[in-house]
Image (tube, rainbow, N blue to C red; front, side, top):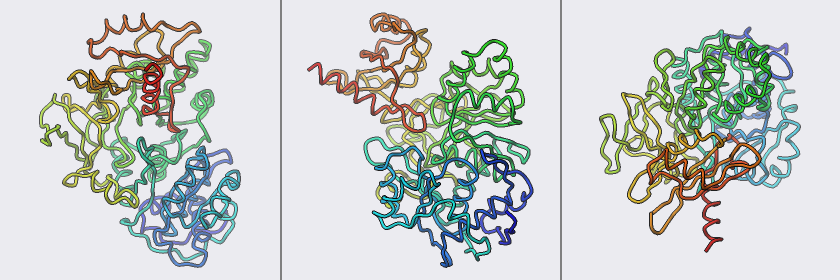
Length: 512
């Protein structure tokens, strides 16, 4: 691209940072390397196409369905430069979920990569929404006058996965995003010399903020793959000069499995490739201690575990330099305040007692889109109620589970599903497991476990329960077990426990 980005980008800090790094490599994808100047120029073109002669989108919602890469960044940034609110679609979502997002946000426009335009065309027509392909958006002029965008404006809507109801749109302002990025740059030591590989979906805060936005704010390089494939990632580790990697536990488990399947000489090559990294991070789900230990053996890295959610971005993290404790998510990040509240609404001020984690800070979202009641219920005295039950141990936080999903009340005991899962994963024949509580007239809830096992014959449930009784207190031993070929998961690779609960509820119904 030969035309110049002439706008003063100082209104939004991320653009000012990009302009300061104009000549550096920003993005690498299947089409090659792209500088920060390339990104800014292309983003201006997208903004001009979206504005179509208007002076400001004034927080109009613009959805987009673009695979990871240069075009994704330019569309997202173009929406922001035009004054719009960016709403990324998951590229694997079926039509009903796409339609829900378009309808719920009352989108004014949608941008699609050519391979997705047919998927969105009928939906856009049905809802009378303007549809632009990335080719159309990128072929305009970059000389359009752009609006001045303040940091208090809405920037992005990300949808929570939803359990008992439709997903809610989580609204983040530019200030929220900036606060989160600056916090993570400080906590994890980002510099312009960093080079990170992204294999995470870009409709979720983990991929958008922790990886892509942090890299581009720091003046670093973000290399993007269209999807995760274990062998391809390992080969990238060997060939590319990466310094950072961030992923979910499922990805680390698959990388471990691929390493274990490789010949000994290849294993040595893959392990040696990890030496160039300065940091590897795990999040979005609980990291099994066994995976933590195995990855350290393979790579030499102690994974940095952190805690976050869509509404708050990242809130807690193990330290970059000091002790990283397996099974713990660390301490509050810079600029974040955390507290634990017990069932009676009193703050827990000492180590030991468990309670709900509540968060304050510039990272906390603005609102649930068009849901004022839900927004009000999510806060108490300005603190966001995470719904996660935690305990503090020597100033480190440990997540016991979701108050609604992972905390099981059985026979008067309060039991952590995550704690039981950690024990079950040590069984020689269990590959994966998920523990849920299912309503029971006698016990309140009974502990149920869904597992996948190694080998064609599999284990017997009787022998498994006998083993479990030797590992767990009686009230923690699963009273019902199902052996599955695979655990149900969502697009982020997280196990969907509501679906597992339904399996056990259906089993009980069939027996009665």
